[in-house]
Image (cartoon, rainbow, N blue to C red; front, top):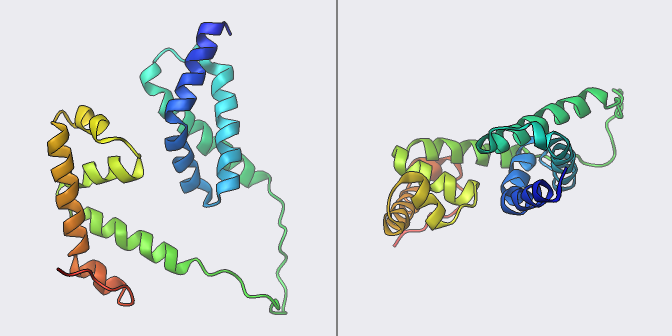
Length: 173
């Protein structure tokens, strides 16, 4: 790989790394594993860099490499925990609440109008700046700010979201 392409790859990783790390986190649910997964996928992408003609499809290529690598790792894992009749002495972490919260937030986002949902997803899930979102949506930065603000207000006032989590106080003005 020549130095121009090397710098192009380095710029791509610097620009898209945080977003790709969040995608890896969704696949692994563990930061250290996500970093390893992203590094493995980026190594594969680096080796294939000259063969990737459509630079607009790079994120998709890396995400597919992450998914394939994760599946491969999952298949290779040995069974470290063996079934037994005895209950372990240590309590096991229960991630049910986190999964329930993720599901409830997904339902709440689904109740937002499409433009508001898209703006929130781009802002908080993809960590895009307001200017980048404005460019993607073809609107002004002010429109992005007001759209995200209205969406967040609707989420705060979403009674169904509060019903899913009665222990979390609703913010009312």
